[in-house]
Length: 156
Image (tube, rainbow, N blue to C red):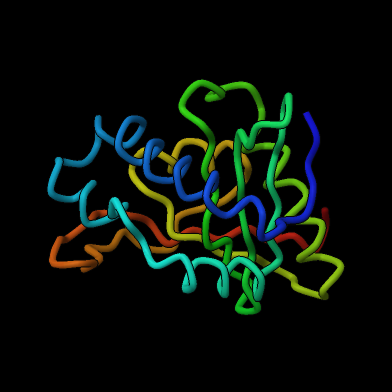
């Protein structure tokens, strides 16, 4: 597996991975209306591209296939971290997160934040993040329970 910086050519594959991952992996914790609001079928490609290019964004590739991606914005926020449904529990997210945390440290950040889904919360807890707050977040007409989580990276 190779971790590399995001390139525009990966956008369509990332959007497909995001949609399928949310609609399969997160389906045990969220209902269909929530999943449809979270990952819409035809997202605005320009918005996604601008966001991924602006952020520190990485993909994980194996056999020329994107198996995961993640990004960090300039507000010390791990915005997205998603892994292909067939590559769950194969350390893909761990490897991407490690690269993002190193980048954050190189940028001088002392901590990073994320909003973890119910599904992702145990993963982040295992990576030494802690819950700052449980929240009911409104998005596309639905309410989601998720968790604002933080990790101190100063002593990494």
